[in-house]
Image (cartoon, rainbow, N blue to C red):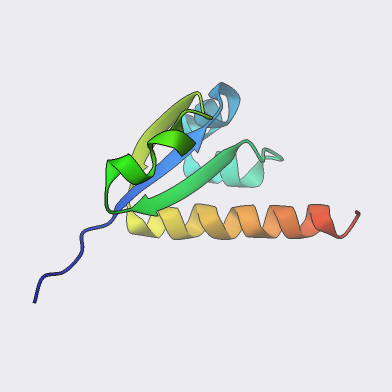
Length: 82
């Protein structure tokens, strides 16, 4: 049985990518919402979304889950005040 190979990427604006390049924790501890993580099997499925971001980098599955969780927590805090 074939297994599907997922690719994980972090997309971000320049400032958020600079924070990530310092360390994953620096980005996560910042107030930046200017990033998104994606998992996909084919690049064609993600190309339109990539156009919205200044930069992207491949990440591993664990980093994907950590950054996804971080975004959820940040947005949950933001939504409480709407």
